[in-house]
Amino acid sequence: MRHTVDVSQESSQPSPYVAPPSSNPFGAPPVEDRPLPWAKAVLVTVAVFLVAGVVAGWAWQEFSPLAQYTVDEQGGALGEEQMTRIFGPDGTFTSIGFLTALVLGGALFWWLRNYGPWSVAIVALGACLGSGICWGVGMLLGHDPIEPRLQAARPGDLVAAPLELHTWTPAAAWLVGASLACAVIAAATWRADPVAPVATTSQPAASDPAPPVH
Image 1: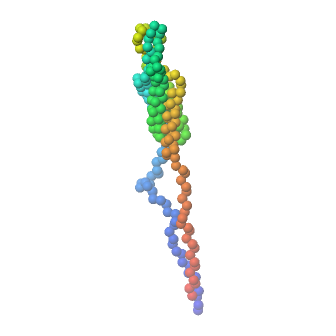
Image 2 (image 1 turned 90 degrees about the horizontal axis):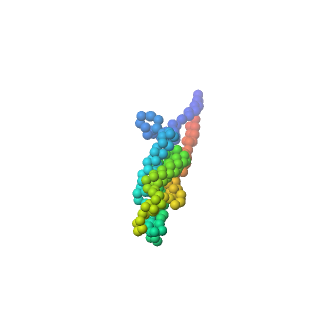
């Protein structure tokens, strides 16, 4: 008697899709970076630029070069050398504001980067606040009207020009510095979206059935 038996052999192939080893040995879910609450983010930004504005305002009135009026019988006059210093407070305000906002704006933008584009708006508003505080503190501490001092001076005396901004352009230095810091950091840390990996391991071909065993 002749018997024919078909024997199929099933080869065990390892799966090409192996789960990557977990970086957490205890199996706990990874902790995601969550953005700070809005109230805390705005409050910290306002507080930082508020303090910076006070310090910058003191430095502005302390280190600004002021032109000197020479008093004569007709009042006060500026010489050619002193005319070049008339815009000294504008330049000092611009330099202090730009550098302060550049440093603080960059640090706060990096800290608030999880907010995305909203972090730029928060930093920009803080920079505008710092600019206003700097001007207010400087004017409060260093502005002294010149007319009463000219009237009280005698011929030959030198009277310093009042601390003031001749244009409002220097006030924008805070916003420019903060915006530049945000742009540089965003460009340096920008990365394209990662491309999904392409599986290079093809499915194992179905094994040919074994020949029948007679």
